[in-house]
Length: 591
Image: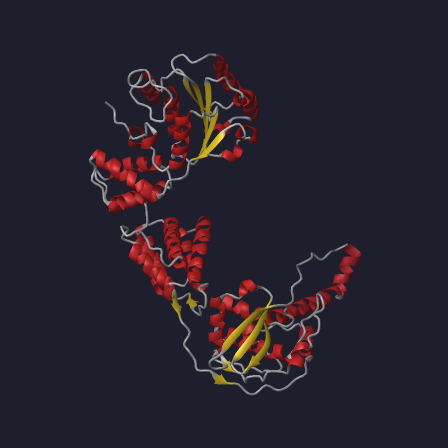
């Protein structure tokens, strides 16, 4: 006798054997018990969740004759009568399965509907089961609408599809729809344990966990992979052999990577990526396993009382990493791992792409002030420097920064990098390695001075204020010294200084999304280099003078002057006048 694969050998024959679809089983069982039967059913769901199996069990329930031949409609078919055995073997004359993937035309549907005029030969009901019904053509759907809406009392339709979005609404409205859900890995693991115990196959729990995750919610895929693993392991299921067969990444690498990212250890990150390359482990599988662990960590962080499965040997490591990494970093790593998987196919070497994704995770680590050294492929932390005293600022009129900008721009001098921008009120001495310097604390201005704010004109330069000059110089020094980065730097650039009362800083921003608790705390720590024991208050409102607005205004002014220089050039004017030349918008850039 030929070998019967596990997916067919352990196909459920009644509703009690169904796994993971209790909501469908309960609805159909109650309908059969009370005999409140609909004439058309639509089962939807991904592959291998039991759509065809439910259809066959429903057909047996409608036509079961009982052990003694006197049975009726039942939710528990006997499995031994002629109707039950013939449906299981696929030779029951009143049960017809049509594969719409290969019989999708109107002729095939009309041939099926021609049988509807004849009463059942053996059973109580004729059952027409159309699999992958979404593959039918529009003409075929239209041909079956009338019969589907008002079939004979002895005819039942069962439709199955993996893509219900492609089924016309006119068909959906005529059917009772049941969505069969993908099965949880725990459900698949429990069923595999029972199947292998019945088969007498030795299996390690770790191997079954790998198979359960690899099935991705499909019980048929899980049983097929189990068949393959039994053959690969010569009759045994060991975690090492199953991992080798699936090409799965050992989660010890994943925990090592996440631990190194939490501690900012770039050397370990790069070394682990090289180890994955040497062992030939999949880069995509690595990011997939990282997202699974990060998702579990996020759940533990969001609900502190939640813990991983006690039987899972990886539960302790997951809980430890959840406690070691802030919640915002976990969310950031999860998002970057998801997007990083899509980038692997774009790179010439997937392991190089994996390394770049991991280094990006480290570079965008909130509050990170690390720099990547390309020569040694390691991450070097900047040496902490003691804050240096800064000379007291020289008072200057409000219009002074604007005058300086206009004097420099016409000479078409390349703009200095942001770290070396000089502001008139607070001169910054040039240094090869800038550090956070101590600024004199401003005395809080009178309320009358702060409340007399002029309206900001549309599409105009920001209103320059004394508080704005002081905050602009402060932010430039923090950025130059790498004291702020990422979201913290954006919070500082987009905010306006309202007042400084001793060590209390009061800022205003327009977008509340920038004012995250972690960002505010890290900005406050950076400000302690200027005012010890600094406190920070951030409010939401209209911003008239911020470092970002000043930078944007300066860039716009340079762009305008560059365009005027080009348009006023005699050669350019000659080309436009004599040859009809045109300047492509957006191609002029200031030097």
